[in-house]
Length: 53
Image: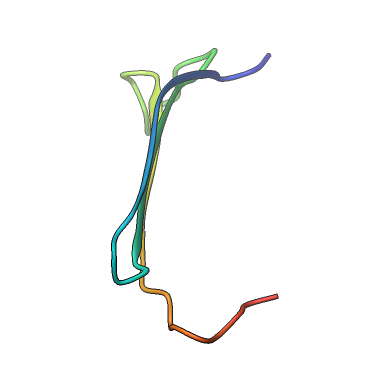
């Protein structure tokens, strides 16, 4: 069973910071997620001139 992607948004700010939000509908509800949704939110500040490999 595969989760279904409901929403995905990624925004890169002018200063290089990144905001990303993702929401999935799970194929089976769980006790900790009775609504059947799982989310992921991230706000990342990128350092200019640095590459993370």
